[in-house]
Image (cartoon, rainbow, N blue to C red; front, side, top):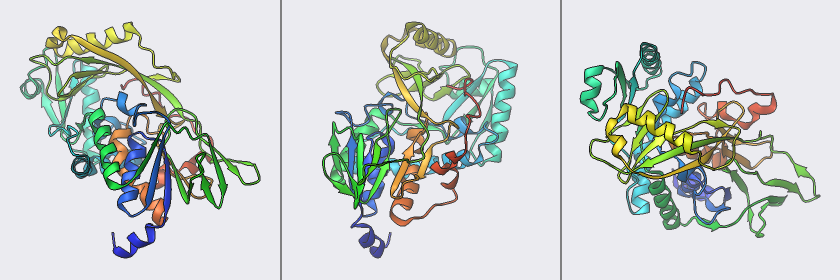
Length: 393
């Protein structure tokens, strides 16, 4: 960034509404480029919504390689994956500690002939989209991950699909924002924004730009000085409940993220996460013991030593979906109001690239080709989710 650009942006005051990983990452990048930034978070802890309840997987290849009509999402995810090492290093440097960005990739396991065909399609799609992938025979797979004890016919290694610890990431992001001079106002639910000469929050503070990074909860209303409610053109966020189990670490547990069709295992330093259900339209955070038992049984079928792992806790989070399962990134129908929301289960993966393209638009009015497919304006026409992702987790 040039000195001229920094001086130009230094006068821009931006309010970021929402303190999850997307809002915090946008705030950090906007501040880096010279803006004055304040984050408003309705809870008393940053990221207390879905971010803190996620598994922290950065699955650019696994999530998007098989979506034949999702070239734009694959490109966005690939760019995000490439940005993550530098992003993590910056957050760790400013935040004063690690985020547990893994060095190894993820593994995908096939246990039936049909699943082998599924892996073949994934491998071909990865190669076509420049996503790194390596086919593994059953013996190679078990050498790569000795924790696999169930019957496997083959697998894939996805070297670019890594993971972080979400709670540590939030802790470091909060510290990084504080060190950078970003204001964080906790316990501030913004339900109404007055538009006059700028955007006035409920605490009376005024801003020139607003970034909406809210989750599956309600969005604020924007009201003109005449009292008219102005429409952002944003669709309703679709809640997608996901339940997850945390197991205590045990000898012989997997060292890699391991995916199967019905479960994933994500080992962290402090526990082993097993997930997750996909319950579209549900917004509660209650835990169903039968669902948790099913997840554990599926994990044990892959890695038998997990049968001995005590259950530490279980929880549910509500992912923010959209009608077409793609995020909302860009200016809304209200000039000066930008959306960075609806990232479904890929918020942590897409955080650095979302922050980058939002900062481009908020401060410089630049809309890259990478960002255009995710403009909120696409919902000027009715959209329908192309799939339920019921085969994924």
